Length: 119
Picture 1 (cartoon, rainbow, N blue to C red):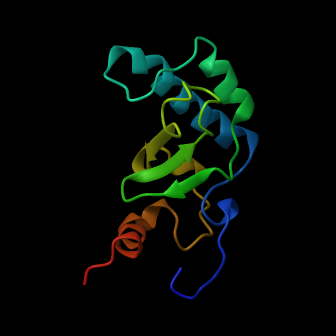
Picture 2: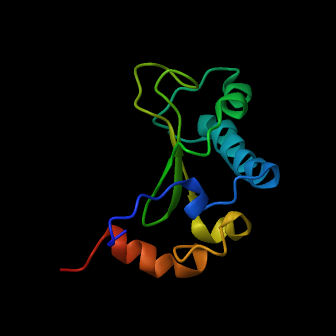
């Protein structure tokens, strides 16, 4: 990141079917539990199916707490809300990290420092 390199999904995650299934299970669980909590999103009755169909490995970013996967506004939740974002903690899904990547889950501290540098 400091070198000005353009990074993509493969720099951080395995993008195989097994990894997608792991991520989708976690996202679908979050959607289903949203009704139990004060979720900022109003999901459609078929949001789980839509989330599975519309999932894209390239729609994520890194946060201090984990991988944040997002969907376009209005695709799986009400248009009045912002983009639905699902943060999956690095420690919850180590099996999908690209182990050859210098920014993989074992380097969570390095990711956090790069995202929030101490000045």
